[in-house]
Amino acid sequence: MGVRRVARSSEHPAESFSPILARSGTIHRPIDPVAYDCVKLIFIRHGSAILLSEFGEKPVTVGDVVALGSNTLCGSEPEGSITVTTLYLDRDYVVDQVFWQHAALLADRLDAQDFADELYSEPAQILHLGERRVGMLMPWLDEMVALSLDGPSPKKFYRLQALLFAVLDVVTPYVRTTEARRTPTQRRATREGPPLCRHFSPLRAEARTSVELLRSAPEQRWTLQQLASAVHLSPSQLGRLFVDAYGKTPMTYLSTLRAERLARLLRETDLPIEEAMRRVGWHSRGHAARMFRQAVGVTPTRYRQLRGGK
Image 1 (cartoon, rainbow, N blue to C red):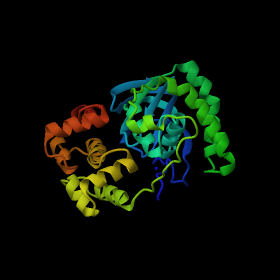
Image 2: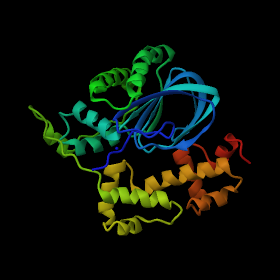
Image 3: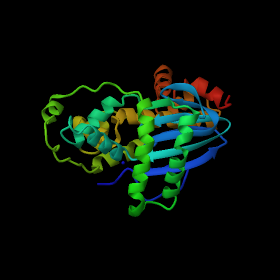
């Protein structure tokens, strides 16, 4: 989410692949900004918190739903404690649903990915459904959690999917979308009869290797040319493969990694902010502050203040 991208969270042990995973829990301590390679829907059941993400520094409370695209940083500061149910959805699975939803417009699944990126251009949103409407979803969410506890089961899949669709039917009208333009390919695909067969592409080894290189040394002064040379591709080839695999360009993915690690240093150490920036690979304080704020929603200085740092 070839190797599949798994809807996994560091909040629970590694599990077998499932395109739909549901978990409930109560959070008492701050959570550093972290990004997952899956789409997340977080339903606030009890309590409140301050969230930090691309939308800035915003409060959430009972009746809110947080929608996060894949590889989008988000951190939280519970006000006492907060109880949530989180749905982890494999990004490829979500793109498939967009394809079938808009099959009259789309030629194939690869076209659907571009269409989805344009339609859902805001990767971090807080949806204000209201306490009663979210309360109505609780029985469905609780059943999804129960079905997920023992790991993936083909016998449970259709029930799990039916519950997800029921939840999405209530949630998606609140999601802000951008009007997606119909490309010439999409216009040609609009016709009577069934859509063209989808073209699935495996996750290429070069994309996986690129991510491993970035994650192992985000502090290195990477350029797209250097990264492409390391995996024996042209920059344009690597760019296309990487976006198809991870939904972001290599350099945007690198900024996400650096922001995540800078947040950890600001939280866990007393390093001066400029030194912490250099350790993650940012050598211009102004540029680092802009990139961090874009990813986390607040400046490094504000983040350290929020986390009780010096």
